[in-house]
Length: 297
Image 1 (cartoon, rainbow, N blue to C red):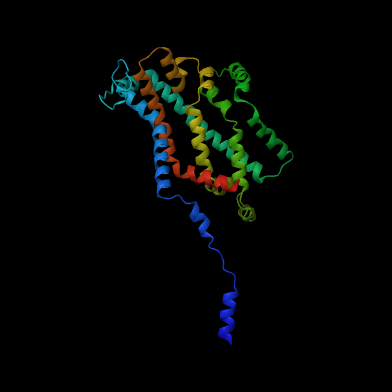
Image 2: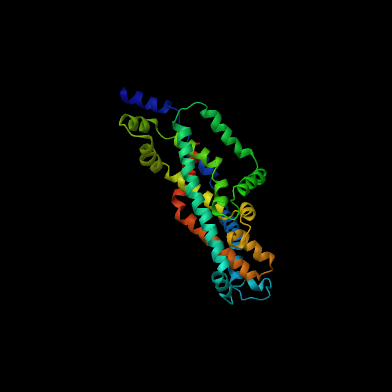
């Protein structure tokens, strides 16, 4: 009797459809995978071709450039790089760009993390009004503030100085917003336990918050470094002398002086290498920071 009831129950039980079938149907076949691979290859070629052309043309000897013959990787000449790396002005521009970028990254990350920690974990009067008023700066176009910023820096004697170049770029509303959102998503139990143990605010920030926000620090560090390294308009306005030019403004001046194309492209390669190295160094934290920021909202 038990066997009959069991078999009847099995027959009467509804058959569950295989949930994997719809997803399996969406998977491309062999032809679809081949088309996808071809499209990805073409996209990679289109993306990498400008970099290839920049490097190859920078390795050509000084002279007329003919297309498409000049895109062949031979003959190779390091004349352009010898002239660029041997020029005192280019080395000075590289130093200026490095100071502008590195100091700005360190200062922006430090100030943004402090502000984000205060807005995320502290209670004080007017916090929300102050935060959203600061975030409203994102909606103000960057070019609108150029003239007032230059007037203030000029009156303070900051033209052709490092501090005049760096100071106006430290108030980064996007960095503060991302820091605040990331720190706000950290577990409240960690901060409550630290407060019960008598941990001071500064020690809580340095020993607990900073290690936990390394991914977002690396992500913002890469973005801020790229922005400052490639910045053109503000260094052009503040760095008016040749000794205070950055690589972007210096290369633009070479182009205006009708310098040979291989010289200009060699300088572009020199300017590109630090950006690529910065991404390679922070790639792991960069990917992790983007993923965690997207998940935590």
